[in-house]
Length: 383
Image (cartoon, rainbow, N blue to C red):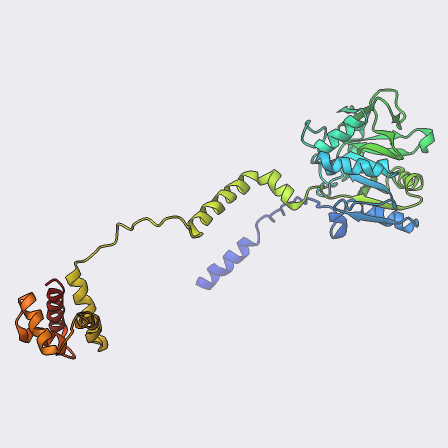
């Protein structure tokens, strides 16, 4: 019977409706390996194939005259000091390309999250603010021209982007820009064909070099290099700015490790410094006057004498407790011992035999006996 019930349960369990599989939502993380760390790896390899001398770096390496063009994100210019170093290099003949948004290496090109830092608050990037102020460049929020209508055809590149065209003297290249930054320059060149005052790319001369400011780094990043005229535009920049030297892509941070720690965690640094000072104050020896330790308990002289006598008794050196006293009293002897004992007995009031015992008994019998001998020696000293 039990076998029949088991078989029925198996049959009925197989007759139910098939459970629908749950749909797993996949979140693309973009590239892997070097391309995930370096957003300009495709542009770097493309220019290498074209015969240009190209490299990438995460830090500023005090570039010399052999480096002709550097492409870096605006967030690299975090401090005014690094901005001044970069402009000094431009003044000596370098050509600088700055992208206001989207140049950071940790930006994911395959999600709908923000495209970059946007129009930063004044004072957050002091170096970038210094450069924009130096060239009288102002930024505002850009108004897209029809990009939202084509949102269904963008595929995995889901953020809104706008297609603009450079001026004819710059080749008339079609470029895709995203983000919310529009640029306006007072004394410089607007390099985009537009009827409005807002632009997506401006340029100006500085000393012996030239500075080019783009609203977004999309034309140079890995997944977009093959779109629109990005590759041709990059080749045009290389021929214009880097034909006689090296081209460098900077994609890291201008701050040192300690600078970042101080900027992001200065409260922890200060707290750790205070704890270190307190620990050193407790551990380092002090050389001032030593205060009396009131916790030390002093015992009477007699108890100390008994304790010393017991210790000397255990070590077999009990006579050392009275030997110095004997030698000091014997130094007063100017004649024979017998007359000396009689004189001490008369002066101290002790019997003559006890005075003789103090000087002649060796070794003492026990700690109690040595205590009596020491007491008699004290009487002889006080006679």
